[in-house]
Length: 260
Figure 1 (tube, rainbow, N blue to C red):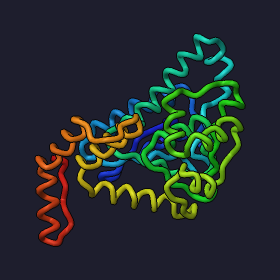
Figure 2 (figure 1 turned 90 degrees about the horizontal axis):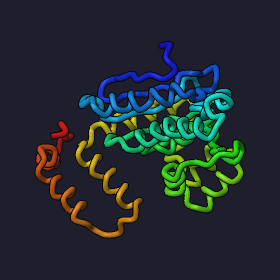
Figure 3 (figure 1 turned 45 degrees about the vertical axis):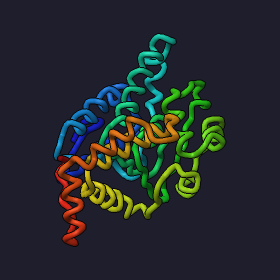
């Protein structure tokens, strides 16, 4: 593969690879533009149930946006706004997918790279991982949506500490603060991420989509059952997957869900 970012598939799992290992997988404007196209391709593929997002090699998930482009592509407020629109769209598209996503992290996970990881549903990493979000080192401000996702994960005080200082967190610190779900040995983290994806892929797709929807409503401020959430729950028992799940339980066998 020669593309700076590409999509590959294996069974029910899709993987998007940030592919600039010589630049620690730093994100160019072209990569930001390409990401929503690949994400839409994954979303539309009924055979792919889970997405893994990773960096090429083992030195970095992504070192963030390619700063060498900033003096040209972000040289004026107008140019900066256009750049932000492209980068924000990539992260919003990732966060808005109906299917589950996992960030597989080794090495540097910084700036916009950390933004992509935070925009995934789950994050697993190796002990080599280092996390930092660095707008204060560049004199920029991150969008509300991304900042909120960070606050939802680690809380306002820890989010302030990360954003005010730009200081790096170790894998263990990231785990303790709730930024990552699990820490594995570097030589095992890929297999663990794939195993997690494969497990999720065996579960009922409607349940997962609906759960993502409900959690999004909760993080947006919902505190009790609503007409929307009741409708989501009612719809679940009118699916073939619900009937298959019940039958499988009674027959003491694994369920085979079809997404219908």
